[in-house]
Amino acid sequence: MEDNQISKLIDTAKKEYKLEFNSFPLSKEDYKQFFLFHAYRAMSKRPIQLKYEINNIIKTVLLYFFNDTEFNKYGVVVNNASLAKGILLIGDNGVGKSMLFEILSEMGKELVRCANYGAMSFREISAINFVMEFMKSAKSHREATKAFELSDYYQNAIFIDDLGREEKAFSRHELLGTLLFERHRRQSKTYATTNKTLEELTQRYDEHIGDRIPEMFNIIYWRGDSYRD
Ligand SMILES: Nc1ncnc2c1ncn2[C@@H]1O[C@H](COP(=O)(O)OP(=O)(O)OP(=O)(O)O)[C@@H](O)[C@H]1O
Ligand SMILES: [Mg+2]
Image (tube, rainbow, N blue to C red; front, side, top):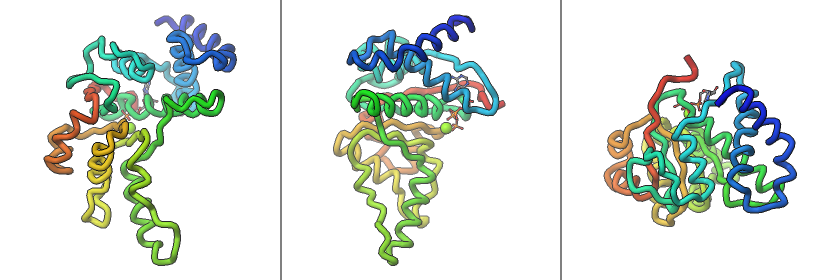
């Protein structure tokens, strides 16, 4: 897409995205503009100003969130594609996995705020912080601080950033393994990014999780050069 086409789309999105909330569900075109607007907003917060590039993976995830049953038309999902499953982005560093969900999360929040439309929103956790918060809370629990309830995270849609990069809680518990297991049991929608391979995830969290991953997620491999270089 040409630069001027993008800025035209963004201009339109800027002007129109507030008005369009009267009509739900959003049309595909409004939805696209709304995404571009939020992508533009996320990019403008970065120290280095790049143009947000759209590839087939991003298009696939957008179609998925748009509830399009044909969302895998580019064939990037490597297992059985289904709207009933979540999404697992497996990929190299700096290709844009976290950023994509950051944009979607902002969109989701805005839809709730402006139109009370919750179908696109999800809670976000970083695997690393999740374990740290859990340990902090467990330590201070003796001082009667509200304990971190793992079970608070078993339901509703959640995005887990950097699965497999966390430490074991107290060097013992695979907290994220438990979380995945319980979420699978409840068929809760889970979105996640990881730098680990499926084999590494299976080795780490055990066969019983490895076995459930294809059932829980549309699996997408995102290979490429880092934008951070
Ligand atoms: N689609 C895109 N077009 C242009 N730049 C992008 C795009 N996506 C991400 N970037 C840039 O690349 C940076 C790294 O992206 P991001 O943090 O999403 O990578 P990641 O895949 O999550 O990497 P890691 O596996 O290391 O967490 C972003 O901060 C942003 O500046
Ligand atoms: Mg990331």
